[in-house]
Image 1 (cartoon, rainbow, N blue to C red):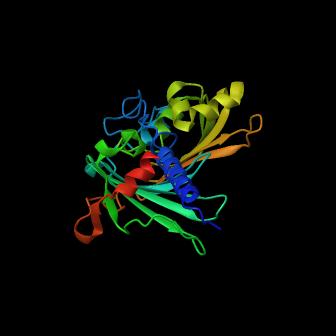
Image 2: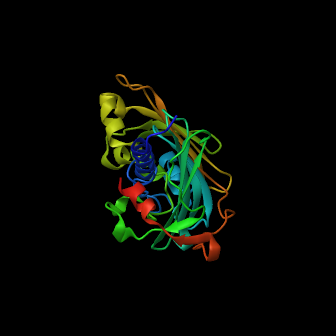
Image 3: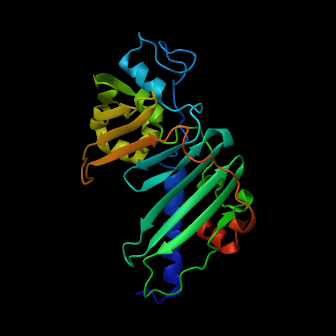
Length: 278
């Protein structure tokens, strides 16, 4: 049971910092961008693969480039699960991650909303029965002043439609085969700079030579857009095997993003900055 205020605050800040780092500085939002999409040989001006495209070119052409309208995404890496909406027209993302405190059992659920150059945050604690002293934050979107952040990059910004960095990973593929209608499989060399950054440089370094032969699968939807990418990262040393998964869905059908207004939003209080700044 949590009874010491100092210990509680430290735990919450670690959870908040871990969530912010996951959302922006590690895998799913590493900001690599989709390398090669829209300009590979064998693609048409619309980004769709031509009949003469190789499997790799066809797969790269399916990676979202911002022309598909708003869509949903989910992602999973070695540390967290993420979900949200991407709206290229609004240069916006709405994404959420959750981390469970291993000692006390409560869960910190953190959401970020980005529209143009503005950023909001929302934090919710669940599983807190019997616990006291958790920070009391507004149950609404809290707009952040990035100038008040110790590390402005600790919160997300819009880096392009391919938030899961499928493009850099596919670009690093050394073999791609079309297994059946719109299903692909192959091998990716994660030692390349952009691919390593996308999946996680520390995790890739731990693989050693095995990082050059990592299997992946991908599925392209009937609309020609990438539906999923799965990278099966093998075990290495004491690290267990894990799976990097990106799913894109509801292209053009997801809700468009807009800045919250009225009672739905407020300026972030001092406590919100304390959580992010650690």
